[in-house]
Length: 259
Image (cartoon, rainbow, N blue to C red; front, side, top):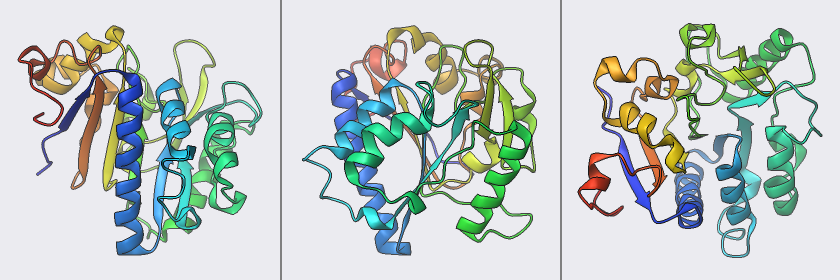
């Protein structure tokens, strides 16, 4: 039986990023204490960039043994690693380089390669990294996600084949606009994480967020983000007030401490 989602609502994107950094560090500390390392999958977008800047800042940088952290990615655009829209490039400039993360602790998706081959190679990399047996799913300690206005998450977009994958860990995906060719972790991988943390900001996502979090099954069905329900792990939503404005807890004036 899956756990109920945990909702935390913050005043604005700045407060959300600071609290997300604190939560990231707490999950990392627990993972290192229990298993000797912290395995995390990062996401793209502007909200994670703010989180990365917090983690690399003076208040957070010394709080975690970064030599025990292994960084993967939940998705990537099919572009070279130096491209302005590369998720790796954003993490490299705002997180990896400032913290001095060694390259052998960073596992990037090869956006510049043939998508099918890049997906196959990344699954092999994850199998070696996690030591997962055939027929099993890997378990990340933490997977970071965002949510688009269409309810997509990672590069799992409405109506695309990636949503229905039941065996592969990594597949090519297709976005409806922008850089269309993508690579993404599949729902099975995401739903076996110890903690899945959504970071969502902005009023433009409020109505979809309401359907994803509170809607009946028929209302939730069109949205890939609604497929994320960890089998045994925690599902945590960090929201700013604008994104949460259509939720019942927000309309009732419940604070982030009570949600």
